[in-house]
Length: 152
Image 1 (cartoon, rainbow, N blue to C red):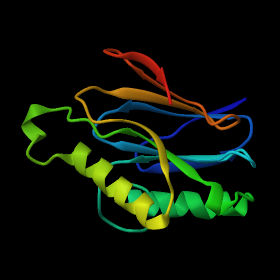
Image 2 (image 1 turned 180 degrees about the vertical axis):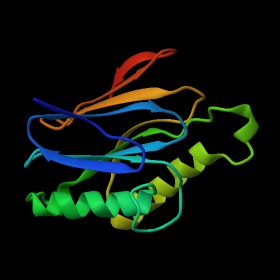
Image 3 (image 1 turned 90 degrees about the vertical axis):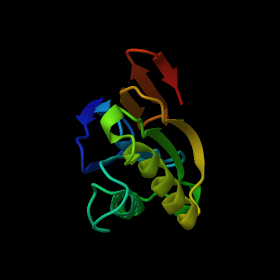
C-alpha cells in the first residue's frame, strides 16, 4: 500500500490502496474528503482559516483543489463526504486569535456552502493529533499522546 505524509499547505488525492497521513496537527485543520463507491479520497493539511483562495494553506483553496482532482479520478461529486480533525488551541499566548477554532468554523462553512456533509469530527481541545486515512475503506485513525487512538 502506498503511504504518503501530507505536510502543511499540501493536499493529496489518491484512489484505492493508499494511506495518507498528517503528523503533529495542532491548530491546523485536516480536511478529509471521501467518495466510497470509487474509493477516491483526499487529505488537506490547512494552516489558517482564510487567505489566498487558490492556496492549499487555506480551506477554500484546499477543498477546491481536492474536488477537482477527485472529479478527474471519476468520483461522484454528489457522494462525497467529509471528516475534520484538528483545530486545537495549543498555546495559551495565542488564545485571543483562536486560529484553531476559526479553522474549524471556516472549513465547516465552506463545506456547507458546497453541500458536502461532515460525517465525523475530532476537533478543538488543546492537544496535538496524528491522522491516518485509509483511502481503500475510508477509515480515519486519530492518535494523540493524551487521548490514545480513535477511529472516525
